[in-house]
Length: 231
Figure 1: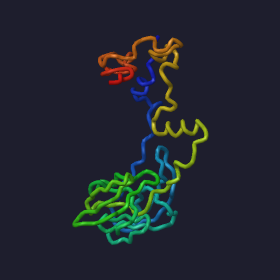
Figure 2: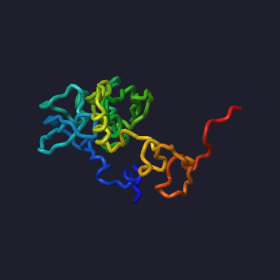
Figure 3: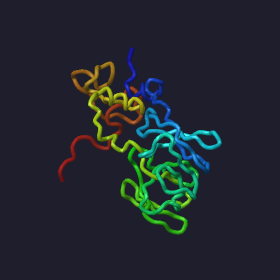
Figure 4: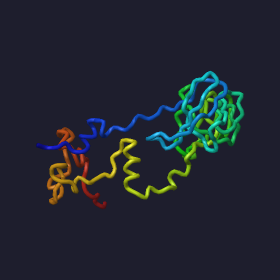
């Protein structure tokens, strides 16, 4: 009996190949003060998460900025000072300040600069708008009412630390539902892939777009194959 190739098994979406659910981190629609209760790691995220408790007893999860610790107090209002961890509208943040978890539209909870060490810089203000320099060095214009967190996300030196072991890379990819390592089809057994076996592909690598799933591997409906001829 034949086997499904790895792309078909993964595409089915069974629990073996699914990533764990990501923790939703959004800026809360509240004003006032909150206390940092705990800072912890979440699988499939590369930034630490902090749990904050509001004065009314409710809690929320936010991305932890650099130089913050448990017991610190952060503020959620337009009148708050532009200090690390505080959440303010962009039109209230002075120029030259680093911000992260930036809202693309007012009230969406933060969409941009949420990975470790990723931040934007407030460059200028105009009537109702703010100009930010993104990590790509591109200047973008935002509604001044959009909110952001003052500071930089923790974990900026994450990429400087090598994995050292293949098992650590495998676990990192597995937490995000990624396939690693990727094995060439021609290195597999004939039962695992149409190109498998020591004879190599043994057939044309071009395949019709209307081919059935088990056969649809290689170059799918290519316009051309091989090296280009010199003119």
